[in-house]
Amino acid sequence: MSNAWLWLASYTINAVWQLPLLGAAGWGLSRWAALTDPELQHKVWVAVLILATFAPATPIFQPYLVHPASNGDAHLSQPAMLVPSAIPSVSLAASRMLFPPIAIYLISGLYLAALLFMSLRLCWVVYCTRRLVRNAMPAAIEADYLAIWNRSHERFSIRAASLLRSRDVAGPIVAGVWRPVLLLPSMFMEEYSPKEFQAAVAHECAHIRRLDFGKNFFYEVVGLLTAFHPVTWFIKSQIAQTREMICDRMAADALLDRRTYGQALLRLATKMQPTSSAAFQTIGLFDTNSLERRIMTLLTSQPQVTRIRRYLSGVTAIVLLSICAGVTGKFTQPVAAQTSAASTQVAAPDLSCTYYGKGIAHPGTCDFDKQDKNKYRCYKDEDPTQSNQQSACEWKVQRALAAKK
Image 1 (tube, rainbow, N blue to C red):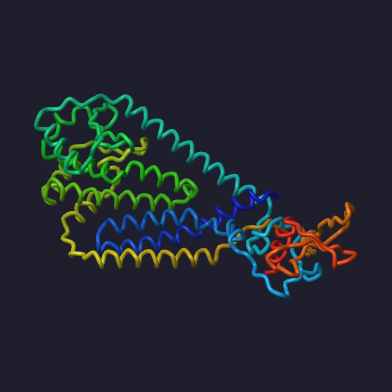
Image 2 (image 1 turned 180 degrees about the vertical axis):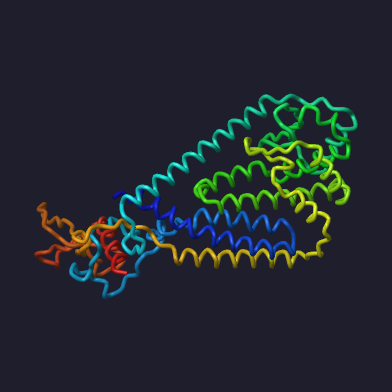
């Protein structure tokens, strides 16, 4: 069986049990981080998403990160090294998770199908976003609304941003990285007051200032590998909610007081039709179903947090997440295919090589160099005093050592 199928099955199975643990750890840390500010909560969830993507791959990369130490007794003899002959690589030699080959093919196939579907979905979303921006029209707005837009533009230090109208959106949304655009519904200025327009524009300008469109695309790409797992959806929803809370505070503190901004946000929510930018790779004002939490967080007075406390909180969160990742990685196991009883008998590893002396090939055995344990040589079976250095012996010796552990 190809290593690729074993790796895919190993990643999928380990992700199934690791993601709930990492999600629970992220939830606990985010509740603790709520005592400081939404920014730390947001960073915690981003770190959890990245860990949840790479932690299940630990068995795949572990053999390439571990180099066995050499010592004077490192000479290998074939009878002493026994490894299951049916297992084709070091990364699978010490596996404790055995599955029938049909189960491995089924798990890997379903994972590939889910990965392909999610990748095609993301590509379609990007295409729809590009088409949405391309079909938008320049927004001709009145002088007082234009003054609000210019003031928001300057307050958030946004150099390149365009204000466009679109009949395909129900609320303000942001799209684009290098040339961000703010898309408004066609009749937005006619239906909403200057205060409501100011609140919406300030919120979206905060997204532009934070480069949230590009960050959100990065999170979608990172989350593709575990997009089949419901915990990944939960983690990304928490990232989106904390992102909105950050932008709410930035908008309220930049142009409006928090109470006025919160009231404007409520009026916008009651007037605006329920919408979601799930069909587009955009950042909208009400993309998440967390308006009540956003208003409460915005209006709740938070204790003053010093820079030292914020720094210590960040370091503590990093340490705790690192411990959690280390624990999950410690118990991560690769997958191996079950074989019949006749084929599971152990046999000596393949340490054979070919010794060439005076142009004649002789059978040999790979081993450490007796003079330099960092090198590997092929020793002639008929006369072990004769040997020559061979790079191929390094892989065979290290493979046999890993199988012995």
